[in-house]
Length: 166
Image 1 (cartoon, rainbow, N blue to C red):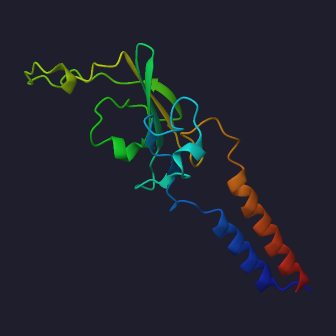
Image 2 (tube, rainbow, N blue to C red; image 1 turned 30 degrees about the vertical axis):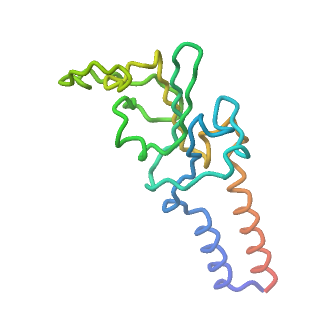
């Protein structure tokens, strides 16, 4: 006969497996100067599987900057880019959006050195792609995010089998 205590303990353990509020999302952190981090993304080329983001409610970002036919890719966590990028769009939900325009940027700067790019107008277009529903989602297109839940479901089934055998 199955005791009520063992059922409650196994149910509690299963519930704790699905709690993930304290987990930070993992994102790839590289730029197109790194082999494998360009348009054709290859995680083997960058040499590692990404890093956890510094904040719990962070978002993975892929920034695509175009100047003519040249494209520059940057993959990182949003909290790492917010310190120096003023062109991040206000809408940070899943998907891609053009960069925001900061009209006050470099308003009081008088420089003749165009390479400084203080007005951030060197690139013809800048696109921000945000994702937060799956780890390492700022790489290439991936399979659905069910792999993380699959092992948790298997662990719950094993716990239930152990509890029922007692």
